Amino acid sequence: MEGVKSLIMCALVLGLVLQQEKIHVEAKSCCPSTSARNIYNSCRFAGGSREVCAKLSTCKHFDGSCQPPYDHLTLHSDTEKSDVLDFCKLGCTSSVCSKINTFAANEGVNAAVERCEDACDRFCTKEAQTVTVVS
Image 1 (cartoon, rainbow, N blue to C red):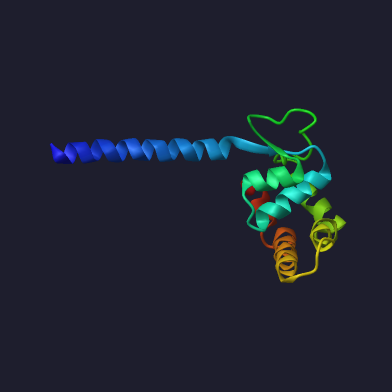
Image 2 (tube, one colour):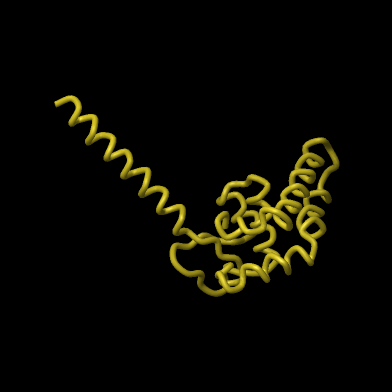
């Protein structure tokens, strides 16, 4: 009888975990502009949470499809490659990391700028394909 209770409890916990994972996968980040999308992606690559990056970039999370005005660069499969290349051509470091650098120059800010630059480097090179999973 004890084994059956344990099995039922494991099944319930597993169901809750899988349902939570399903919720995370279905939510989309929807942004009102190219700049907002760039800021959101760089923030996520630097390790920011979805909520913090959305607030910083003015993007929002929706289940289902993005709605105007938050339908800019939703990274559908036919546009994701060109969007990533366009972003990298514009210069992730200059457009995103320089905004961090304009506040106060101290060790914390310098470390944040360095992490941002590393995230931009990863975004524009070997990890560019991850953008659709992260966002």
